[in-house]
Image 1: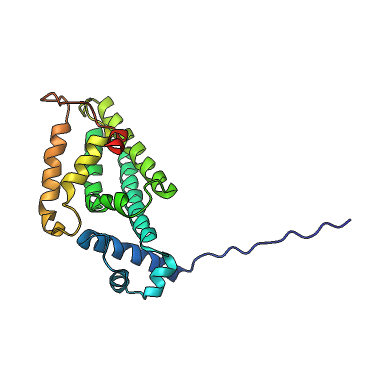
Image 2 (image 1 turned 45 degrees about the vertical axis):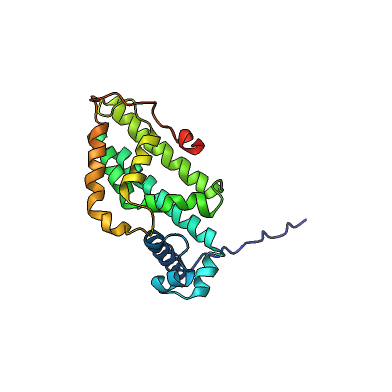
Length: 214
């Protein structure tokens, strides 16, 4: 009895130009969300990306899908910055410092409010990206604490809240004019994280669970 030949399924991969268009849309959307907030017209995003409106909707069926992609892409790059810090073999606190400054450059303070206001906070893509960031930052901090370089009474929530609050004002509020102060103020905060601690912090270390319940 002869067996039927295996059916070979053709795998369709996006063309290179389609991938470039998608990347241009996400980049333009991030820039405009930071400058104007999440309600910026999609046709304006298309214009900045150099593509047609149909291309935007072909990649992202609605605004929520585009906002989610922007936020997840920012989180993914933030995770990559944390991974780079963990791969370094030098001073553990300096690795944490470099991560904090890199995270600020992603403009997360302008993007994070969109998570709460524009789409499902429990979307699987967002949850996965969030968990990855939290785990990697915790590893960075644990390594610095073990080395005696980071005060022990701070948590992941303390660091990520400070990055969001100090890096930029909310989207659409002259945020670009604050650029020259961002890294200066972040460094002042980072100096306060060094061990040995020079003061006793009120309350307890902030965890990400604390922040989600706030």
